[in-house]
Image (cartoon, rainbow, N blue to C red; front, side, top):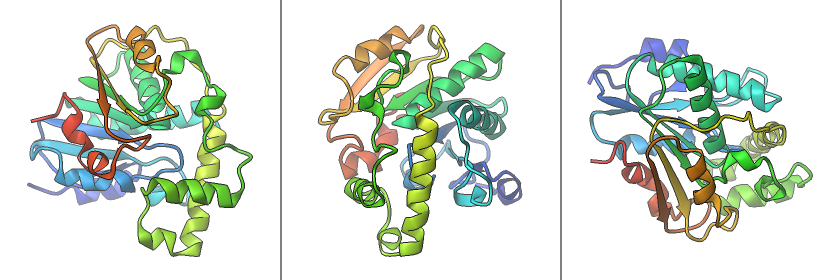
Length: 256
């Protein structure tokens, strides 16, 4: 295994926990509302030795904390598309997104396909309703009108932040700021009208997720112009801790 520390420093939009050269494929991950790349870092120990891990960092967090947040869905989608292209070049990859990141992954895949760029070998969307139906109140959680305390309750309830974050008021303040910025972007979402995507599409959902509509798998199926697969997993919107920790093992395109 050789390192790419120089390139990682130059490209703050892409974080590579494994720093792996010669990979057979790369799992590219897009973040959820209010999230950075942190929840995906442990997956470096879960994916197969020949699978690289590329985490897309949105503006305003992690290594891009000095940059201004995106303010609209189109602005963030354009940024994410550029980051994905820079992460994979012409190498094989699988594109993954959770919750709002699932919509962003579909958006990026659609844009790349329309542009004739290198598309993922598979698109995997997790815990998200189908985007073609548009933004509904069911998707708008947390909400823009929620108080800081309500947002903190949301952040604490889902357990995808470390105890260090939860115990540091300054870091928590930053987490709320990121959450509000992402909520504002999410609330500008509009469906671009793509008929669907041609690459294999896998949908993951939690059996106890109250946010995801019962018809979501069928709606996603309508957007799959190629192979389609749906897997129900234990837990709610972020599954169970064990399932989340090992989620890459449920991604068919990279499972060993």
